[in-house]
Image 1: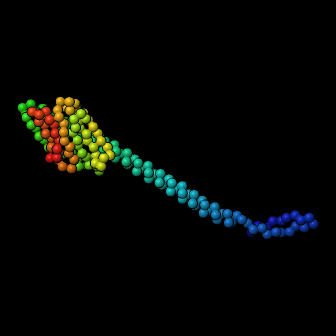
Image 2: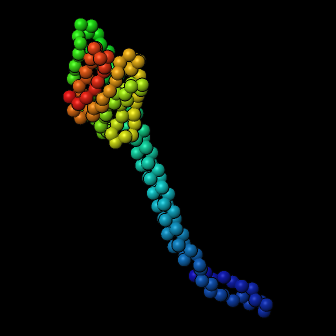
Length: 166
């Protein structure tokens, strides 16, 4: 409560009691301040959490693309090595690539014209390679998941490269 002296026309001063509104406003401002700081803190917390989640997803995508390129290169080199046997009519080799890359299963496809295509299942990323232009000289066919060993077959008589589940 505030007491103020007010001048009066008769020259006497009277004390008037004036209630302060400050205590009510002060209590409300503390609550509003608390709510504002809580909302700002929550917003900062959510932004930092999303930053790290997005960083993790970007890193995972980079690992997936690198793993697909590595798998395609590995299979291509195996075909090139099997083509080196001049006296062989048919060369069959089995190889195994990792069951998953960054939590995604890998599928390998051989098609005429496009060469080798390695993709993830569920379909998220894919990588295609011309296999050093082997598709121009040989018929390419087949597909295989990475869950089981992969069988690569090179048939020199039919000029055919085939991939299948082993």
